[in-house]
Image 1 (cartoon, rainbow, N blue to C red):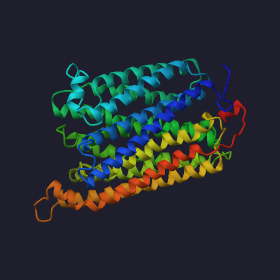
Image 2 (cartoon, rainbow, N blue to C red):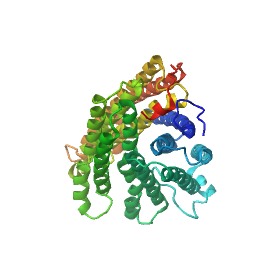
Image 3 (cartoon, rainbow, N blue to C red):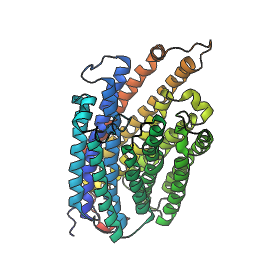
Length: 474
């Protein structure tokens, strides 16, 4: 098959571009609704009744999930052909699934915004197979079925590519993570009437995604980019990858127990959840050592310095968000007081941004210049603008995390551990946290400015570097 873009090793890798572009569009939408929610925390009737807080939150979290899925799929369509050393099995199927998934996603978000949720459930036949109404899994049943169909087609496409091509540690780890992602999502269809059982299996989707199989996808993407930008031997990087994913799976799967502390599950989970959750920072710390060690041992100076900064930054920020901030409130005696406070929100924001938003942008930073026909890297000016976006977004997210952490500590002090034995009411407590929420809004605007800088970097003229196709795998 002829290569139309000389900077791609295989022409079919080009299907990754629309996935990346649409993922970033949804990311922008997520930030917009995040800012709307931040404003509603301090001005309660902002945009009411057009966009109530519960709708804004539902859109914000659903956009988060969907844009990351698009990012993972785009990464797989770029990464797998190079690792398998052959063209993608069916680029046409990849594009068909793109339009199906994008259309379903847009229609679902429009449904949230313009149709009352109860009406949306009735309109989409939720009574036939009730799955709606649960946090993060608010999608109509028909949308969930569509996601399953897209996942099956995607896994078939990727799987056939791997079966006919070279098998590497990176491609097999990514495939394992993607299969796990699809399998765990099936539990979104299981909706038992017993609330404890419902929450027990609900975490099999939410937790085993973000603290389980998604970590495999993250590790494979990081390993792929590090091989490309450092020139370090594949065998060295793959050994690190095996160690990291082993720790991630062992700690992540049993660490699900830290969600079972207070839902009516057996008391043994207090011990299992606490012990294995306390070990969950280890794979993220290993990723930090991994990335910095590989960059220090690099055998080439890759012109795309922005991709290298994203790769190192994602490991540090993921370790802080998923590791340090997760550990802060994961032990059962501590979680007894912190559960469901703003401390949880602080952990969630930094963990999602550091571990998954940043690894997707790492992949986009590396792959997009080639997909756009610019060569190994965009112009130095474009990279400078991109790095401005990196630092503004990362510093702003750290500020958001610190402010929510401070708000969480005050909330626990006033609401959970009152000095006089009389807990302050929830609403009165929220009034005491207003200053933190105002400052969080300012930090959120800073994050939005950083995202704008990141988008503007794509408008800069690229510095075309003509390289032979065989060098694409260097």
